[in-house]
Length: 103
Image 1 (cartoon, one colour):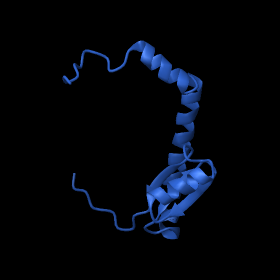
Image 2 (cartoon, helix red, strand yellow):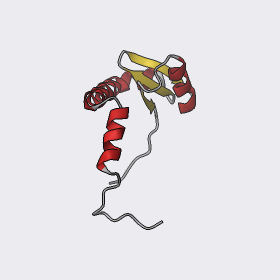
Image 3 (cartoon, one colour):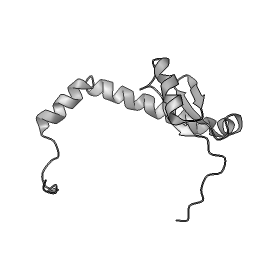
Image 4 (spheres, one colour):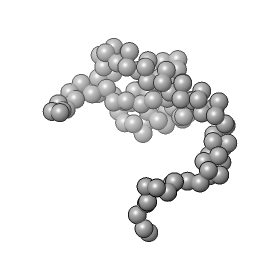
């Protein structure tokens, strides 16, 4: 396989249009991104209380709040799947001792 030439598109226009169509069209993609942003914003707003309530646990946040909490990301995703929300959550580890980064 040869390396990708930056002047060539990765996908053809037809392939891109097919992906957009299969995702429900531009409006559906935009709505999905809007909901994702809402979930991320809510997770970050509530993170201090989530860290206190669920220290060193994985938390799945949906549009209506916390959907699942567990000791592993797999367990949290499985719980979200069981609730029919697998693609409607954001997941983060509530790390009480995050690594320090030197930038």
